[in-house]
Every structure is written in C-alpha cells, then in structure tokens.
Image 1 (cartoon, rainbow, N blue to C red):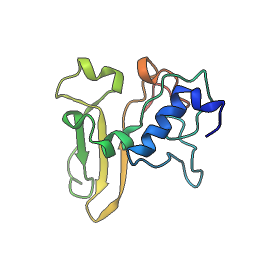
Image 2 (spheres, one colour):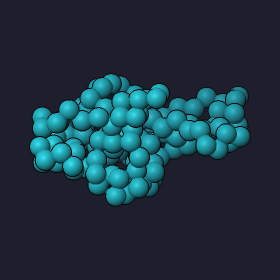
Image 3 (cartoon, helix red, strand yellow):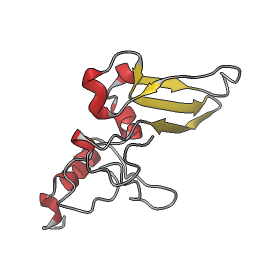
Image 4 (cartoon, rainbow, N blue to C red):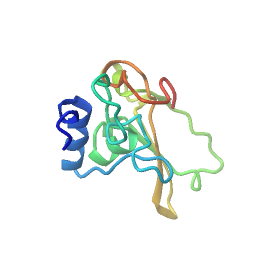
Amino acid sequence: YNDNQIGYETVQMHEVGHNLGLHHSGEGTAEYADTTDVMGYSAGAHEKSRCFNAEKMHDLGWFTDREKQFDPAMNMDETFVTKLIGVNDYANSTTDHTLVLSVFQSHKSTESLYMTYNRAEGITADTGEAANKV
C-alpha cells in the first residue's frame, strides 16, 4: 500500500471491495477508468463520498428489491419504462423505482449492461464523472 493514500476513505473502500471479491472498474481497456465507482481511480483525500457503481451493487446483491432486469431480445415488441433513481434516493423510494437496471441478452449470458442514476449528492457526491446522469 502507498503510505499516503491508504488513509483516504475511498482507497480503503477500494481495498474492502477487493476483499468482497470485486474487480477494478474500467472503461474499455483502461483498468481504473470508471471514476463513478470506488473500484476505479480515486484522486485522493478530497473524494470522500463515492460508492460502488450499478454493476458492483448487482454483484454484491445489494438493493435487490429495487433491481430490474430487461432483455431487449425477448421484449422486442414492448416498451420498457422505469423510474431510475440514485443510491441516495433509496430510502424514499417505492417498488415503482429502479436503483439498478440490468440490461442483458439471454443468448449472451456473459454480457450485461448495468445502469443507475449517478446522483451527485450524499454518499456519491464526489463522483468522478457523469454527475447527475445515467
């Protein structure tokens, strides 16, 4: 560990993520590039409020009561509508809300897309990118 960085909360949560079996959060071939998530790159001490991204929340089994799955290949003639929320909205949400949306194709079982609303407030206030966007 880097003696200076191990004191940062996001670095500690990154290491806890590894202990929970999580891998880095990257984009394309860049292993740490997803800065919406503590498993990606963290700039340090000023970033105290960052959480796990939608894929990691899915992998951990968190918020399963607000996770929905959609397979476009199986629902080609249907319109899918949901109210996507951020993790900070969970306490005030109902079953009409979706915190984690898993989009997958049943014939490609290893490829999924996980989405959430990246609200930049509360425990995700210091998101590194895509603040207040899906």
